[in-house]
Length: 260
Image 1 (cartoon, rainbow, N blue to C red):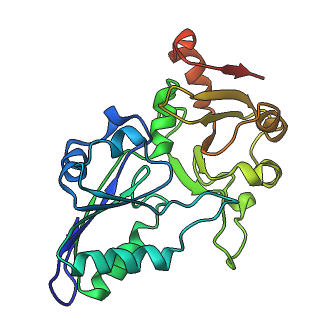
Image 2 (tube, rainbow, N blue to C red):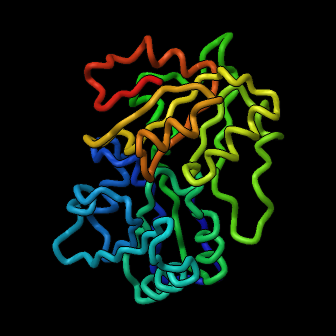
């Protein structure tokens, strides 16, 4: 997808870097990384992907990590616009997919308003990658005919996430950025009608050598995740289809499996 604003200048590519494994980067993304003049990248982008850039490419870390100093969204957009107006080939390299909880839409609006030519290059989002990494099909006839991707992190100043309402919104729930709200997620989903024994899967650092994951039940998952000391980034998946990963994955090939 691409768009042109009110005028003409350089160009910005908003590129999905995928879940972390460099081999899961798209060919187009790899080409753009290798030809960029400047790359504004997220903190979680693998250094092996950044190593694909030219030696003279300027790398700018604009990542945001919860609880840590981070670059404001407005600053990121302003710096991209400034670089494009200098005629540079600008890559905004984002973890996962730019349009799945990546704020890519906000950046497109800023570029369009500023009259900057831009293009969006999709990437594999971490929710899909996490499921695949442990052998879990997100859809399966008769078990999971719908999937909902939802953020566990409400926008500052916005309404809280209504987990009671979301409990039965889809057969399978894929929750991003939910570690800090596990208690609310657990209680809300049960209050909304999810059975306390519903299988839950949490995958930390999906697709990377340090990947870890745990299987548990909804009525225990908050305690179990914290006991397992999973940190960010972690994807949480809720639904009957989670059972399939325990049968379809080769557990001996997957590091640090915990079944509780």
